[in-house]
Length: 185
Image 1 (tube, helix red, strand yellow):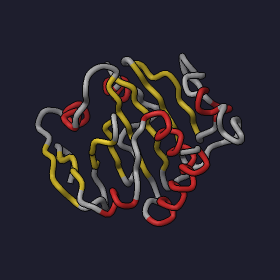
Image 2 (cartoon, rainbow, N blue to C red):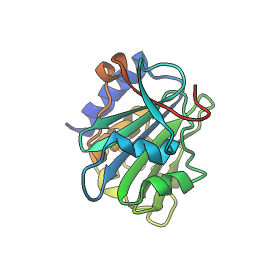
Image 3 (cartoon, rainbow, N blue to C red):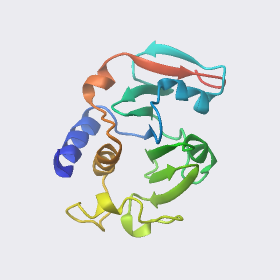
Image 4 (cartoon, one colour):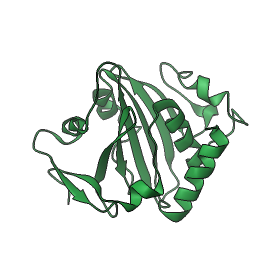
């Protein structure tokens, strides 16, 4: 599917279901298979998974193609300005973390092999920084306007194109696994 078609898919989904804030983190193993047991890296050993409607606060986790995705509807699961958690998740994996919040802050972070490779504040390809700021250029150069700031929908499409993870209304409307751990509702 072309980037524009994917961006339109996400634009429609965001219009209907996700409008205030969001953290969407996608993990893809560099080696063997990956499962939702990766939740332990996020929540520690005493986590539980509870089937729940996708609403309110909390982190929802699921397999998504060759990846695992974590969705926090309020945003703020991880912060692109505190990379240590994303670095820990990326040991032996690739991690895309997309977030935005009600205050208008937005960021895309890409990490692999235990290190954040790039951070894109305000979803602006012209403001990318990190040790490998060109890590996602293979995707950005295919965009209609490669140097223009990305919309939320376009950033989600970019993550899907690179990771294979797909988020849609059907997934949001069905019960999913909610990650329950210390400090969570």
